[in-house]
Length: 360
Image (cartoon, rainbow, N blue to C red; front, side, top):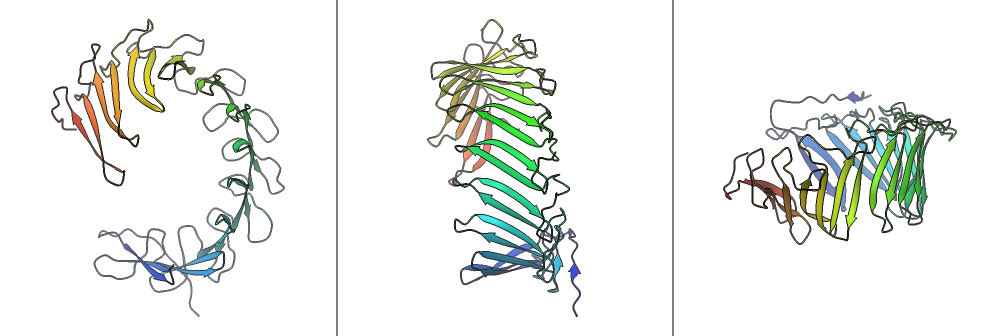
């Protein structure tokens, strides 16, 4: 009887292993890793050397093998997994398998996870199970169920639950996240709660936030409060950031201290004046407390931006108080962004105030 091999991933000094994919009837039949120089089968990045696939209606099963062809556990601690999809091709269940195809616990402590969806394709429940039918709390997560409730298509509440589907404090430090929505289903309030309903600190260091929107639905400011309902700066150094809109092409962004006073940075900049076109920022100008242009810590008064027809950034150009090109504190006046035919950023080029390329 063959004994299952437990594979250990070792990093060799030579070239990285190459993945080879074999197809059969239009489907991936197997993937294996081989040494780039010798062609010998070797362990891949997950610890196994080969994945073999089988298909059955809406099920896809993958099993893992060593370089010698023995069942092999990867870094997740299992020998394979089965993925089940519904008629909309949405994954509804993932099962983790032992060497003989039986359910087994993976390295995170669950054997299968099941998902269901609402009508517009967002996940409603994620439920974790052991090797039997019962749900289990995943040790690294602290919960057995992730339950999401929506209003229209906007998340209104997220609740972490125990196996009985009661709220439970998760690894994130809270059990419930609530979002209050306005009539346009925009978020105006977010708050975190413990399983007993008491205030909890969320992942960003605050208990609740209040979002003020104008009549066009544009964000004016967001204020954050701790579990004692005190305004907090979340360690950012300022209380909140407020945006004033001037027509459709200009906005002024100002930071305030916790006591409500405009807050200047180290160079005296209080407000960032942004000239816009739709969602694109065309120019940003640094203003002092009197509303006059000022040089920031990088010795820049304004930054002008250009874009291509697809909205990709082409250049960022620095200007002095007179609107003339100027070198920033790092010695360049302009950054050019270079894009390839696939729309991927291919590189950047730095120019000084005279248009000469600068080495970075």
